[in-house]
Length: 181
Ligand SMILES: [Zn+2]
Image (cartoon, rainbow, N blue to C red; front, side, top):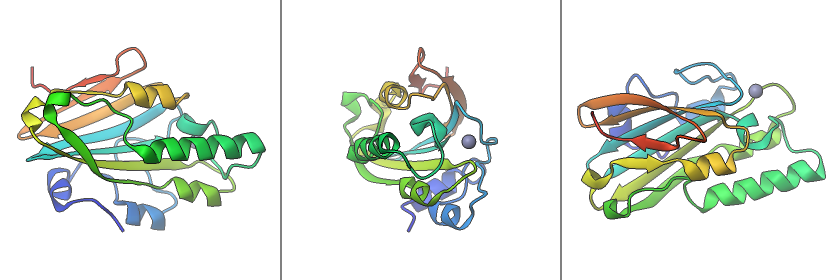
């Protein structure tokens, strides 16, 4: 089951990778932006009407430091801790004035439990409904960088109305600027 709303598909015909259901069927899935590279993650942000949609794809390494089913006690605890943390909400700070609330979220974390070797990608989707998306001028990914210890660079492509742009974030520059300057 994919939560991907129709509008997202309409907005991201080129940028968007496969839906989660397609992802599950394709072990060798790669994001259209680039190949699996440890330290790097890709994110798509789309704003349309009252909706904000964020799609994140990252090597599992960036979150856990490993890319297979957790084996040691330490890995199992880390996996559980991160999974609980990530399922509580979204790792972003949004402007209060925009009045956004998380309405849907999805991830493929459980797929990692079945991996025995090779590389693994994680895929996350968050969907918000906002009272006023005009006030949505910045998205701070600080909590994401704080909770993903091996994430060095986040390549973001965003789309709002007719404006499409890109920005690369890191630990020292965590704010995505959603303006067309
Ligand atoms: Zn890998």
